[in-house]
Every structure is written in structure tokens, then in C-alpha cells.
Length: 347
Image 1: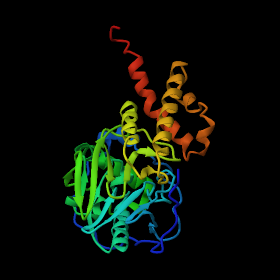
Image 2: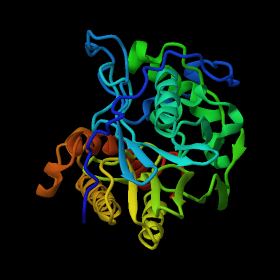
Image 3: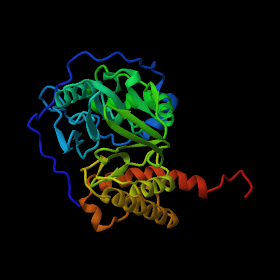
Image 4: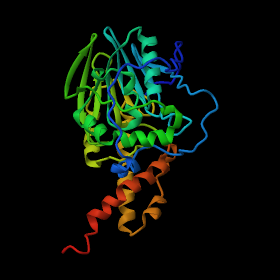
């Protein structure tokens, strides 16, 4: 299976994101304590007090061509901190005769503005559409750089952002610091359903699945055979599970494995021309589920479960131990709730 090499294009680094944003309607802030549990579950955030780089804050986006007229901006295989500004997720750009079509908007207003400039430098056009794969903040907080009607997502993604978005924003400001300056949540103006949208000579096949969250969009562009799988697929980077439903996730991976695809763009990790990412994600989820359940059945505490050994093959997976520990925190309370009845209730 050939990996798409992360070789920089001649039109190397895209803009810094200092231009004025398109108008977008943000939603008002609510008290962060209202959904504190949601903030605690926020994926991928660490090190709120890490030292930021001394250089001016500039994402310096580097597009990588994966096929004719399609580029990927690779996220770094890290957790969100003040050094990377939250730019940890992949973003895909398609050139069409009507303008650029983008999948996911990135972690901040600053990133979104850089993304607009990058898309224009690659295509010579503005942005016709931005699809959002799910509601996690590293994929959607660049929305402010785009008109709301250009932003498209399944209803479940929109609802998730409306419910959790302000809490995510508070956590992102805390974790990424000044990279987030001026960032406000903007909800998509278009609802995506299963179907086909034709834009500028390309056919974008949208399918709404679930598992990583309760609403996960995949986008297949029929001409190129590029499938953007969002965070249903991770490759060489451990999956995150704060809102996961593992049976639904496995079902979605089975669906992806049946798609006629030339290239799979994972939410995190390298693009490949095969299904290694889907296979690896499925294997990781199985390891997580089996290891955590075994630890629970042995009566181990949550802290003890976090030290459970992982298979040798996971040593090559970025953030494997870190994400396993987070998964213990996500799933242990569910196991306790399902297996330990309240003492004041009859069995």
C-alpha cells in the first residue's frame, strides 16, 4: 500500500491568516459550568501551560498534493497545545471550476483565515463549500473564516456544536492560548444528508455514519476516488474516544472498507491508497475495549487499569499510551454504571 508522501509543493507555504474574515453568526457564550463534563471529555488537549514558540503565531500551512487537484494539509501527530495551536487534524482541499471545496476548517479563526488564503493560492478561486466531518474542535473552529451558508454538516454535527461548542471553545482558549484570539463558534448553515452534491464538475458523495461521535460524515469525491473519512479513521496515531460508540464505530469502518476508494484521507495520519487506516483503527478499538474490560473484571482501579500493557505493535502508534489512558477515563465510568447497581435499588 503506497503512502502519499508528505512532500511540500512548490507553492509551499500558504498564508498567515491576517486578512479579514467573512461574516459569520456566532452563538453567545454560556456558563462553562453548565456542561463541565463535556469539557472534561474534550479530546486531544494537554499542557495548557506549555511554553509557546517565540516566533510570531503563523500556521504556515503546507499543502501536499495527493492526486490531480486535491491537496491535504497534514495535522501534527500531537495533542493540542500552545506550540501547535491545535493544528493536529487533516484538512482536504479540492479544486473545482466553481471554487475550492474544503473538508474541515481547522482549530481556530487564525487557521481558517490561513486556509482561505491557501485554497485561493492553490486554485485561484474562492471557497464554494466547506464540509465538516464531526463536532470536535480541532475540525470546526476555523468556521469563522467562511460564510455560514458555505458550511455544511449533518444535523447531528450541528446539534453537537450547539450543545457543546461553547464549552469546547473555553477549553481550546485555555489549551492553545493566543492562537485562539478572536475565535468564536459559527454554526453551519446547510444540513448534509446522504446524497450527492455536484460542485464545479466534481461529484461529492456524502454519507452520514456514527461511532467516533454520534454523527460522523464521510465525503467521497467520485472523479478522483478520494475518500475523506474524518475521525472514523486514524492511521499511525491513536484514536480518541471521548464521544465514542464502539459498536457503531466498527459498523462504520465496515462500511468504509466496502467503498471504491483510490485514496483514504484519515482524520489524523498519512493518506494511503488502501484501507490500512481502517484496519488499524478497528484493531486499536478492539485492544482498548478488551484491555479495559479485562482490567475492570479483575477489579483494578482506574489508575491501575491505565498501566495495563499494550501490544508491541502499538509502540509505533503516536500517543498510544496517552490515548489509552484517556480511553480508560472515558469507559471505566460506563462499565461501573452498567455493572454496579445502586445499593438503594432492588436487584
